[in-house]
Length: 278
Length: 342
Image 1 (cartoon, helix red, strand yellow):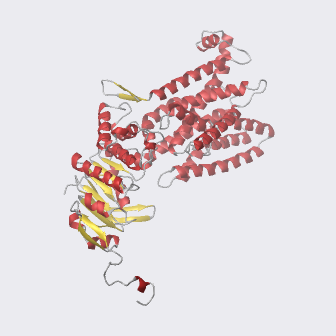
Image 2: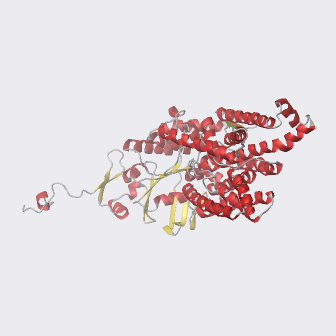
Image 3: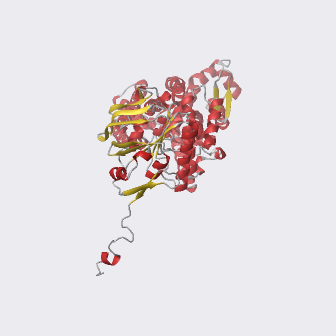
């Protein structure tokens, strides 16, 4: 398996709080890798480390075989992009202007706006469906539109690798699917390697080509969703009893949480539960 | 936005409105300067002023212009520009419109440095150097205390406000220790004043502006706009955020300290000039150069107002900037509130 981006034997810690020890992961090239796991399992921390935002206290993140912290920052930014969980749009900035900021790693003091910059920004806005909004102010957009604008900015960076930290959080179900479809298209049509942290296991199973399941700072399983998503794995990772069936739409694994009480089975009746004689 | 491209693949991208604001402010500053130089106990016509400035005038007038009036005007221009630049940098870095050096203790630090010399006695050069030192030490202290896996806006503001409170107390104590005559001089200095300023006051700020600011703009101008979108986003775009913050803060603190050394802690220019510039240019980002131009205009205008508003009574310029700046701030907060942005 080819992998331009990997972490080897990493210890990840904030101050004195250690999140993960001896953590190793590899992102397969041209994959849509999704990291899942319960809250506080270290998945966002892993993504921050891969994105060079958090320096491992031991071990290393390797980009094309080199320690990412020894590479020049602007060079890394031409290879590896990131959509953080929260970004602040400056007051009154226009959509096209925000997307244009993604060109920073390709620009210089006297190369502020090449024809290439202009072409890439136009393409990025078209790819994310925000071309019509180009002259609008980011403040007036809806949550889903705004997220697409931020993705367009990351695309304008033109990096073969793109990391996304919970790109669907705060969006309603329709916009979640819209963003994930967009990611899938970027992966398939543009051949980019995507790494996303997602909360929803079923979204992960449907869209990922490579899944990394984490619990308490460790990788429990990694591989294609069809191979690794089983009832046992979900129980082990999330502590959730469930059934795994085939998604009738996509044929990918679909996790159905176990019902608290099976309807019609020999469960105690409501009257019994209330303490009355049956 | 307009783009200028050369055949050698070089390109510049400019915002016409921001350029226009900058040009108009520079012209306004120059016009005000000529007016300021021409007025006083010995009035001179614009033509006389221009002749004296270009060295083709009457020797006596040339003396009045180049040795007495020009240094004061140049000090005002430079101090205004330096304060406004520093204010724009701070507001951008801490992502808070109130993050200005007079709110974060740096000006008070410079004042402490100056007051120490007032109490112990010393030349005006010692006073200026001590003010610069006071500002820089305060800057280093606030930076060090705010550092926790990098410096973040809110910590910097809170620690800055705490530092300001402490230093205000220290300054009050120092004033009570000073001999009466010196204390009176010190209070005038603390208000911010341009009276009797000569080349020795103007040159340090002028040199800092001429050398540091182009370097800072070349190294970090474009990156500074990215930091406003959050540290993570800026880092992802290849900005070394912590290094940028350290260098840019250092330059801003140095500018504020030099400005304070030249004219005392002139209030509110650092806070209001960047706001005004942003409203005029309607551009997102720190608007460094338009802010500097607006600051220069503000201070020269405020100084003229201080000199001529009440015939027979000259006010220190800090009184005017304080009153007008404070009123502007209140007006700004009220309108922002009405617009639902605050």
